[in-house]
Length: 347
Image (cartoon, rainbow, N blue to C red; front, side, top):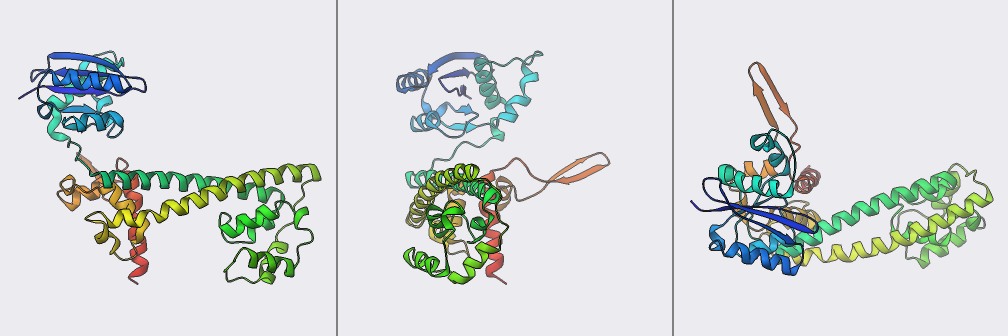
């Protein structure tokens, strides 16, 4: 048996506590969140013994501090915040919270219940790069959807036809159309020949002819906004289109980088060979599963991590099967998306 450490993460300062095998406090550290502070934290822990023999419990499983501790050789054990919160009555009757107290609780939980938690498995630099790209791209996709919904809402309030002319309001052709015609007045003289010329200029390869698109534009309910209101909303359309067009272009470049990153990883080509996995879905699954296979010794553990198996609650005569809420939400989304895609490919 050796010592156990706990670290409470803060935006500007971090509190660390080290306890021995009996739960007695060996040392307490408080460091700033900067290069000097992290170096001082590592040096202070090193004085207590070899890094490999001093595991550290922390609520946050990623970030600069976690990377620094792992690079120094410490086994890093993430403990969910709700598990830490549930143990507070064990340590005091008054449920007060402090950084030093949380650091002690983390260290003592690692001492008493460390066998219930799995240390972080080291990921390769290639996997870390893929994970950063996938998660960042997913967040930008969510931002794109929110902006597209906002743009559609503005258009439907004063020019519904412009929101209905193309299937996807955030497609390059739809954004190009709105950049050229942001208000009903700007499209007042738009005819079939002029629209056909615009489509050819933008290299539109859709299945709809200029006549069909024009009919769709004119069939929508007419807007009732006054001249001043329409002008203001036209400016809003121009602003949203400008942001969306740049975001869509950047997302296309980020998506193009996924395939080579996935293909360079040992399990990448295996995942991309799955039916309808593609490059995006395969990248999302690989980014969350990781390249350390020992993280999931069985398929049941992987299913639980992804929230794909139910939770059974039984006590006395009551028996209920509920949805698994505590899971890796990104992994759940990727696996369920792949399952739906493979279903379409296997009909």
